[in-house]
Amino acid sequence: MPISLSYTVSFCVERLIV
Image (cartoon, rainbow, N blue to C red; front, top):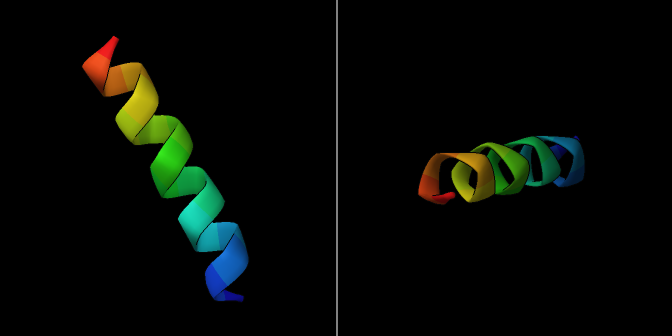
C-alpha cells in the first residue's frame, strides 16, 4: 500500500519541517 506509506511520510516530513 504505497498510499499509506506516502501519507505517513508526508505527515512525518511536515512535522519535521515545523
